[in-house]
Length: 145
Image 1 (spheres, rainbow, N blue to C red):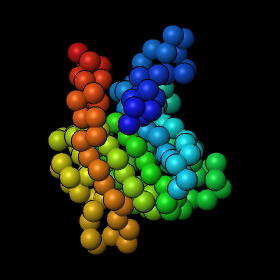
Image 2: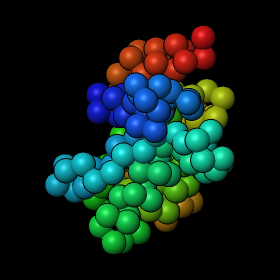
Image 3: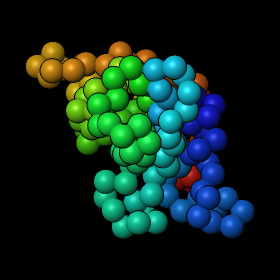
Image 4: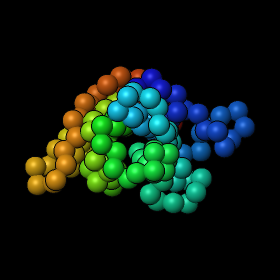
């Protein structure tokens, strides 16, 4: 989670690492624990409504390994995934999802919905929420101030 926090607050496109979008960071790890890819929200930067940290990390990880199925992989993200991201995590067959702050307005890993553990779906990753919750929530609160 500390690596995801680092990604969340570092914007490589801005001199000095300034933040242009909501600071959410995601890190995708392979089955062997090696970092495959990172993602940081880039909606404002790209004008792409799907450019959430999780989606970008999944895209980059799949491209790196040459396979859309991310069996055995773990995604660590600083904020509870929304429905779009949760759906992408299920469809990519990510094995484990770890997130920091809960998102009561749009969260789809237990707050508002629970897409990740929906028994009607063909894949359900293990989910661990609230990891370094205070630290991840503080980054978001500071951004919105």
